[in-house]
Image (cartoon, rainbow, N blue to C red; front, side, top):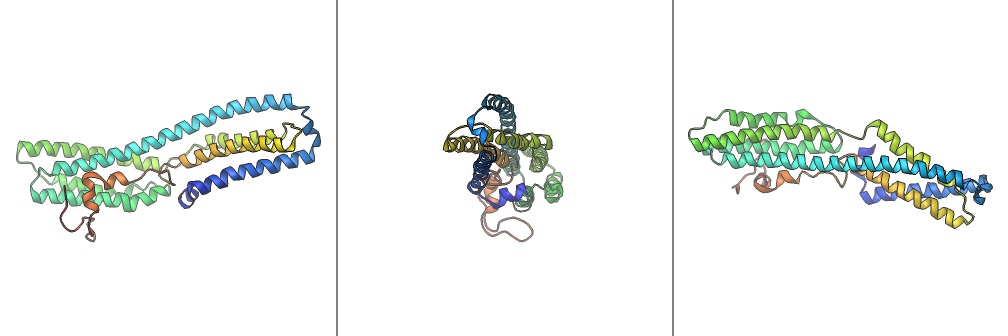
Amino acid sequence: METWLLNNLSTFTLAVIVVGGFVVIAALGSALTRRRYPQTASGDHNDMVGVALSMFGAIYGVILAFVIVTLWTQLETAETVVATEATATAQIVRDAQAFPPAQRDQVDRAVSGYVHAVVEQQWPLMRDGQGDYNRTATKLEAVYQALQGYQPDTHAEQSFYDQAVDSLGQVAGQRRARITQSSQQLPGLLQVLVYGGAAVILPLTFLYGIRSRRIQVLFVSSVAALIGFSLLLVLVLDRPFAGELSVSPTPFKEGVLAQFWTGPVAPGTGVADGPATR
């Protein structure tokens, strides 16, 4: 459900639903509480309610801060992983320029197939929170075979070959990290603390007595809006590969890898027809 909302609704729409929903619930809850228990408007219990709000608010604030910082760090890590994988993939293409034409073309075709599989096949699955390791396994194996089937003849070719092999190892490692991160989400215990804490704090604001009805609605609505924005941030950051703020596959289409996305693509190869610019 969370992934579907992120992929099918804009961030603005989610903000209206989440924040607006909390504000409406707070306003209605405050009005119903005031009508059902009119004595709360006198503020006779404000000392007790204020202490409870301060204590729960401080604890909940620490939890929210921890969760949001953790999720933001995970998003930045996912972006770094994708950029590192794309950079290592591009480095293989650059190193292959030192190979004979036949071997270089074989490496380019294998890398092109892998890049297209990542962006066109694996990325939609990651947006849905599905870490499918097999989706690009055969394409990555083709890159391995292209390098394993070549025996360098000169010292220069050997040097570039060694760098290409090292880069391929980085691609394999970052690919696994990327797929693992695509299926990660906030642990269940932290979800209970985050969403359960909101369910505890918001009703407490209904009990804080303020004689002016308008001021009380403004008070509870402000608290509800703050909680709603915080939960919206948690919701958006919880899935690094889903939603408008998700990690983009653009690094696999830039730089030297852009040559694989220009012109019509030959069926079954993922290689663009026509001359490629290196």
